Figure 1 (tube, helix red, strand yellow):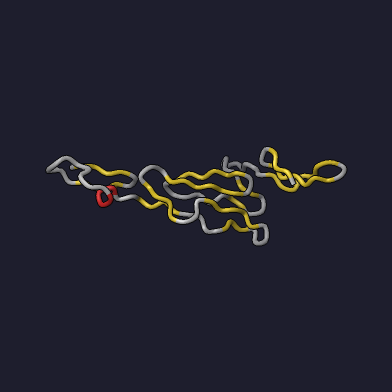
Figure 2 (figure 1 turned 45 degrees about the vertical axis):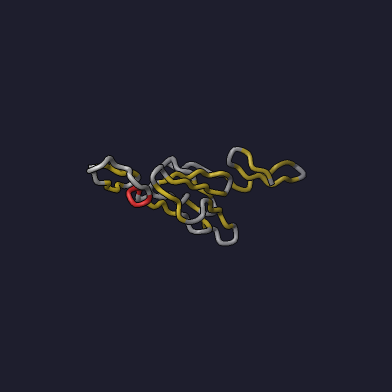
Length: 114
């Protein structure tokens, strides 16, 4: 089998035969024909590479779970469960972020001093 430009080919004697193609539906989102739409994560990014999805969180968030999932051909499901992105509480994890006499307030993906 060979993958070229998001298309999976099975090599046959009389030439390659297309098995499946990742397509871009009207919403502009890629999906896998057998497993359906790519699971998205809040406060993070996803990258589809063949039938594997790689995940990364935005700055100020940490990834909980596996950083990649794949299309299981036996169940036609994405596996394992997609990760989540959890806010990092910079105020609790780092000492002296704010100048003296200012209080650190955690915000989603960041913090402020007030």
